[in-house]
Image 1 (cartoon, rainbow, N blue to C red):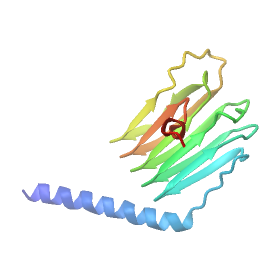
Image 2: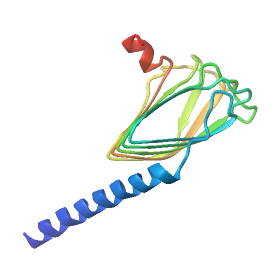
Image 3: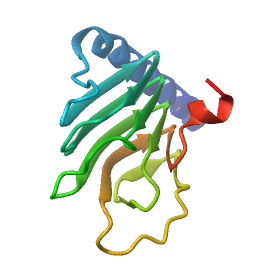
Image 4: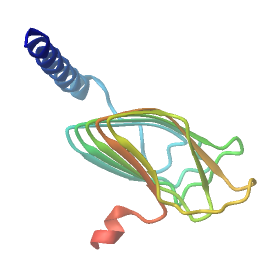
Length: 155
């Protein structure tokens, strides 16, 4: 019984620490992501963010989502010659990445109590633009699709 009690106290402490970290990060970190930004720093904490990029070229960047949701739509963006690399940190939140039909997705990140879903169902050739995704997903999810969730609900 003491081991179980210690375990729950440790989990609670970890959760409260991350919640406190998110509150501090909300006030310290600012997004640098606009429609034409070639390399983004997209920060979403305790809220939602929707970015439709039309950057030419688009290199990628960082996406931080904590206790919220992010939609990143790349269908109007032109990929950089080197490809696109996204470094993601998702903590108790979700990211929807929307790519054009025919693009390839390569996920090399770590998932802890969460999920990654490539719903593009593409059979793209090796010369197709590639979105490489690294980083960490904890208690959250990242879904890659060719159709924005906003289109599905009719907004």
